[in-house]
Image (tube, rainbow, N blue to C red; front, side):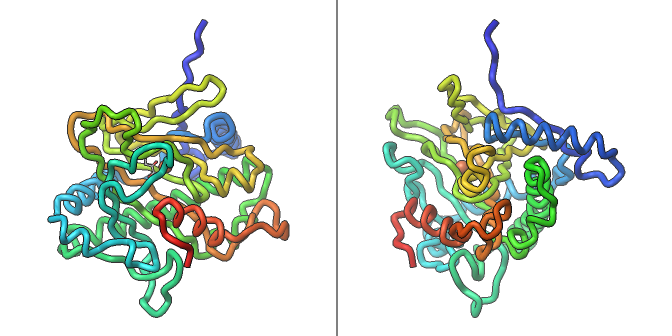
Length: 311
Ligand SMILES: O=C(O)CCC(=O)C(=O)O
Ligand SMILES: [Fe+2]
């Protein structure tokens, strides 16, 4: 019998609901742990993020990327020390063996005053759109991701046998950035062209919202050397482990290669949320081990993917 491998869908409602029994919470945590070890990826439902908030942020993608090119270029992330703002199609090379990615993107994170600027810290570059059209739905979605990110990290920590309190420094003032993404229709016949080249994510965890029905994400499953397609399902988030969690758990939670080829006829929008963590934190699971900080790790990985020198 052939075994079909697929990224599991896990209902995490029992962890989030205060009234759920301890036994049900344990079951969810165990299922999450197994998915993180085997695939490095899971899909979550029962997450508590309102569907309208998801639909609104996807609409924000369309509104933003429909703006004239010069208005988008005026928000370029390359001029922002906080690494917030817009990148043109072809700006990022996620896989050095492939062509530059066929996607445009826009990073937005916690709003920080201009006098508190630093790496991934500082003001956002908001487009010239009415606040209820862009700023407000994006900010509301960011808040939902912060709560879901916290819950997921707790599940990961408990699954490894730690108390939730071990996450205190790491989740104190976490850097967590949304990336609004637009993949135009995939027209190239060049095998080296991807929407997003094969890569692992840099940070701790990524919570990805795919536009429902717009498939395109593929995850590498090393035991069988297969690329597994992860369908774009409504009200289901894709969650994956980043390089920090991989390193900090000695690979027990796997940071897995993935890539995107827009498999739909038209445009594809998606919104990954990169939960990096508090920049000053080190490995919460091995305090005092002398690891590099979150900032040192992220700066190295992020800047090299854009050809930026570390500042
Ligand atoms: O757009 C997607 O489905 C995934 C994007 C992704 O992997 C990334 O931006 O790191
Ligand atoms: Fe990714």
